Image (cartoon, rainbow, N blue to C red; front, side, top):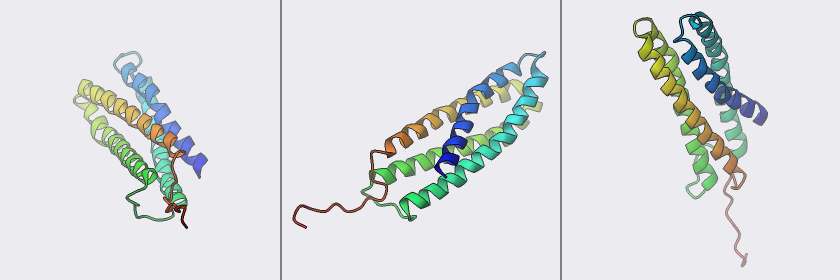
Length: 152
């Protein structure tokens, strides 16, 4: 499950810089058609990547932490909660971009492109934050077991 999560997350975030290039290319009349077709393909594959990230992330959380409640003294679980919030923010941005901003392109193409660029850049920044949080997970105990004292 970890491999699916890592591959789908890197596919999602890794595809965003080329997506930014496609949005920029769509401003050029000679390249617009090809750029739009490529963005449509990106959208189809993006739906799959986002779904896999969310499903594999939820499964991994359950397998690693083993419960839904948050232990207030667990740095790992707090970081995990922040990572979940980041992933949900990225998902909301992706949904807004696809279903609110893209349709705006018909009547307001320049505004649509500008907002898509900002949204994708925010997704990249949030994705990098999520990756940094994951990198720090190895330093923490996921289940926050009570430490034994020397007297026990």
